[in-house]
Length: 235
Length: 235
DNA sequence: CAAGAATCAGCAACCAGCCAGACAGGAGTT
DNA sequence: AACTCCTGTCTGGCTGGTTGCTGATTCTTG
Image 1: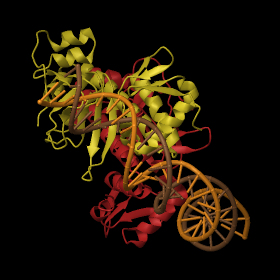
Image 2: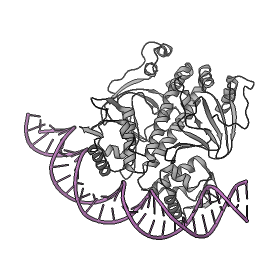
Image 3: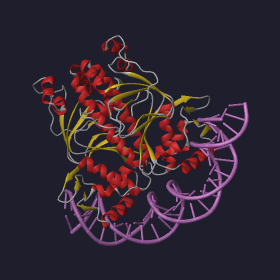
Image 4: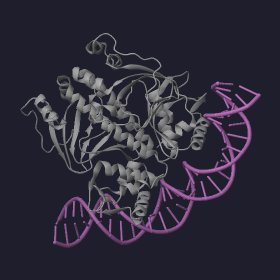
């Protein structure tokens, strides 16, 4: 299957070099041959495992969930991408065609742009600054992912959950009247799939945290009152 | 502290562009201003948390362990890097000085090359193919790390261990007379620190796997007889 | 807009897997 | 030979997974 694109276009005026002066990767990718703008509704699939990997995506706004689905029906989350994340980079690898092996789903309403891997490669060769920017973006991805590994190696689920909440604060937090709200509608199941636990356990632990006065949950959005205090909760 | 370098040199003849024709990132980085060759003995530190992040490293041969150390003295492994891995990319990020927050230790005898971030940036701007190669290298890193996240979200330790062993086979496996040998001297403690478990549990589980005839351990090197059979062990 | 469907949150009981701590014997090092 | 680091095994205790059920929310659809 191909990726859904509500609005789509390509080939605007202006050269890549012009765009670079503008500064952002967005403007650059917008100018590439075959680029397109994608608007995806919450819950809709962006690509499926087995799809050919031929495009590179840049998430402009919203969140995308990368997950792996097992035969058992179980599903685990490999990454929750935030704004300005580059994904689908698999396609940049050596020429031979490869397939996606993750499932990419819009976790919120998503606005993204994408371009064929070949165009991206050309753009990099044409102007090195493009490569540098992508390199920096990807470095961030690596750091984010490594933070997630730290989270997952905590032995007790309580620490793991707390650590995960702090990661979410960093990536999706918006200031609220009191504390920071994680701007995602998270079900307990979704959290469980991200930190390798079960729905029931998450329910219990979140309940504990709430009765301790660490957070508030309002229509699936979590507000952390004091991230610093929360971070003291794990040794 | 600075990074230890048994042998060191810099500034060879030949331009960067010459090196690119040669093809590998190694040759390219070797030509950069301020580049140096590092030989590090097993167990020696490459950089410490808090060190200024000013160099980019390319692991030529051996394995490097990135870990985070907690005040409690506990230590967890964030990544086990293999040959041709790029690391220390933090330093490529925006101009402002930043510090390492991971501990990088030579897990085996290591041969690596490094160069100042500024030189690398210049090289990329001078020839875009450098950026492209680094981008590909970093893409691999992302994929590797994501595989590790998959491993860590398995709920039971047995699956987690098996999954980890398979990752190691992929990254450090060499064909043996029967099966594949993981070419690393792994203590149970080291495995525990990588998958978020304890030494005792690893001992027990490895014992189980051995008595099931799945693997052999000889002087800390693990040989998996049949990776495919092993992979069937988790649902 | 309201009824129905689907998903989600909360609770309880049960039990296995894993951790903690402790100790003895083995392997490798100097 | 002395030392350090590593492996193997045991006991008790508790966390967290599993299953099953109920009521609440949210989404869909007539």
